[in-house]
Image 1 (tube, one colour):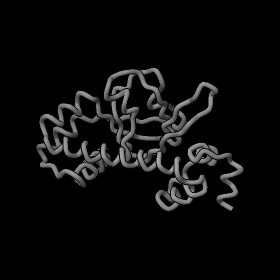
Image 2 (cartoon, rainbow, N blue to C red):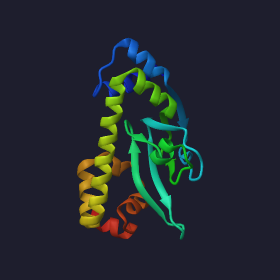
Image 3 (cartoon, rainbow, N blue to C red):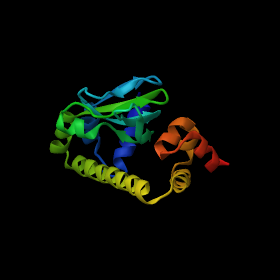
Image 4 (cartoon, rainbow, N blue to C red):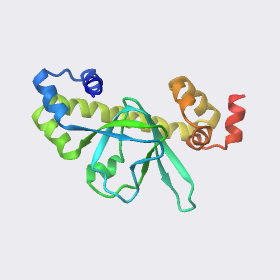
Length: 190
């Protein structure tokens, strides 16, 4: 467990270096959680008590439309933050599902603990601001790719950006994320 906390501290200190005293306050605000493959981290219509920093594993965030079709918004792996952020921030029921593609480990940060950290350690406010901006940029890029690129261009960009992700995600899920059939995905790979 000690190693997990060292990873989290390193992740935070890439943006906001902390004193040992500050780190002790930060570490006390996080709790550890482990889930197995196919277990839900977040389920639609439930409250979302935390945002999650992934220690290990792979997850998908998705919505299901009225016809029962799954729409994958994001894959998240080690050192990603994930949650249904709207539900988390506003303390309302989730509109998304997040489940584990692989066995996964997380640190959980409850809203009240994040607020406490931001008020007691201004450096953490800066950390969360920057991480939120990175997430917003990634979301904008994803939306723009869906609007302006072909599925094959999106696939090629994903390979360039996250080559290890392609190896970890089942073809069916990857096709769903790209908005194509498995057969079309196979042609890209051929």
